[in-house]
Amino acid sequence: MKSPANLRLFNFLFFALLAMFISFLPVYLDAQGQSATKIGIIIGTGGFVSIFAQPFWGMISDRAKTIRKVLLVLIACSAVIGYLLYASGSFLLLVLFTMLLYCFLLPMDPLTESLNFQISELRGVSYGSIRTFGALGYAVMSLAVGYVMLYFGVSGMAPLFAALCAVSFIVCLTLTDVPAASKPVSMKSLAQFLSHRETLMFLVLIFIAAVPSRMNDTYLGVSLHDLGGSPELVGQAWFLAAGTEILVFALSFWWMRKGRELAMIAFASFFYFLRFFISAWVTDPHALVYIQGIQMFTFPIFYTAAIQYLYRIVPEEWKATGQTVLALLFFGVSGIVASYAGGVLYESAGVHYFYLIISSLSLCALLFSLVLLSVYGKRGSMAAQEIGST
Image (cartoon, rainbow, N blue to C red; front, top):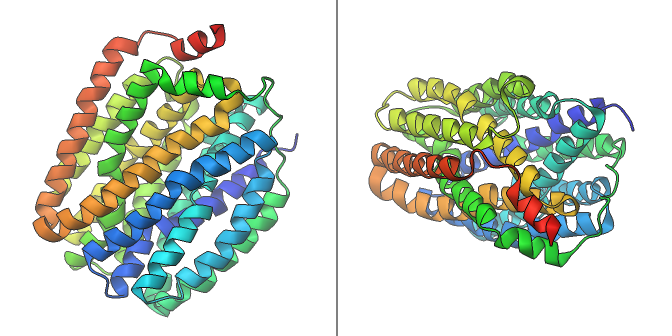
């Protein structure tokens, strides 16, 4: 198998694309004169597509025993749709192209993460040493897009997105697929996995924690604009948030241990609560930028722990699909709720109450994670054991 170096580069490029889509689509829509409610409708409607698209592409990957070829198809489609999205201004076209980009770009995330995790295990390197480059790509592109919008306007985003997709496609051609699963694909094993109590409780926790996180992701740029911030300030905020993830991912081999996942999820949930609660009292856009540094204690810890916990309880042959279910909850279903409810909440309540409410949701996630920790924290991968024994 080839060195993980090419996979690290692909992570850099793919997460740079995600930065343009997740972080700056709301900013682009705001610049097009769309209200917070309409921004929520556009992004939330796109999220509906991901409910079907992410499992669909995950199932194709598992059935065909390939991740790389599926990624190539998704990148090619994303290049065309992304260019059209960032060249559009009408509400209906924005809804249409956002839906299509959710269909092709977002399913790449769980597939890439599955590739990262499996190659890291096969090559004997830490998952964080690969995923760090994704955080780096997200950080660099967040900063770059802010200045692109400042100097070239929103029209500069379309060619930038298409060019980035083209380079990603070329790099993806050099990647090597992970070996096929040793066990045959079984719908029965997947049904048993999803019906297991530990699995269901874990997925509920992911959803509760993801909704406030996705609300912040969607409306951070809008909040900065309403507080008087400029587009490059939005880029700086996301650069700081993603930049702080780099060290955390790089040191994941040190802080992440099997059996400690729920404890780390509880730790991250506390800092999600703290981050959003402090944000509620901020009136200076620069201060809101600085608060994004708390990201180092939230998303990278939460998501790394969630992936490792999932891989301990998911059947081997359904790892890509299991990763898809996780991403579907964190970026898809929760994104729909966050976009629709967040848009209405933000427009009716304002920045202050918006952040107070999402901090309360994060507090609920913290309490629920502590409950699960008390029940399952000292247990092994019980779901996998019980499924394997049937």
